[in-house]
Length: 191
Picture 1 (cartoon, one colour):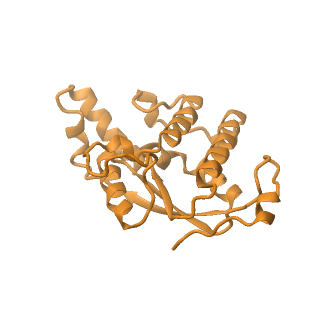
Picture 2 (cartoon, helix red, strand yellow):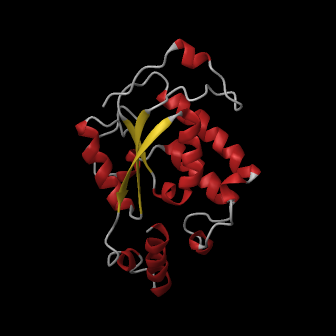
Picture 3 (cartoon, helix red, strand yellow):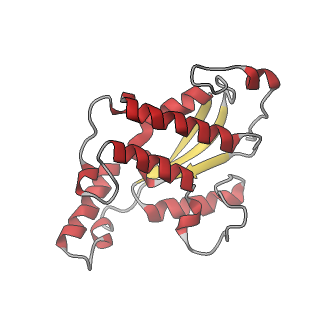
């Protein structure tokens, strides 16, 4: 399922954001979401050798066992900006709280959404392989990401990496009961 190359007419079309309107119409991308960083870092290296571009850095070691190079840093940074604008940063007790109604329509979030569109458009540029990304935070931010995909005319294929809920409290063990219960809350927040 290779993605098609952009045509000159698509590149010339403009939308209200200054980006080409739906220039990648129908192109599929894979978005791996879930509740478990370990699950995300297992799914990404499994799909990459099967032809799905999951690596940001061409020189990354596929089998190093380090999960951080599977994350596209720019996705993580933009997701963190959205969470910060909402006061729901990852790792803080407020992270698990519900988002305000219509949060993705707030002006601060719309500004970041435009940055997301520009960054994704740039990354997909002339790249024609099946492409994807994985980031834990994306699961909570799907409304804003769906707006990005719609604006670019992309067809997201979601893969959900669901971790074992009994492992969540273990993630916080050794750091006290509070950390164990926060890990459990985090699992429920994403699932």
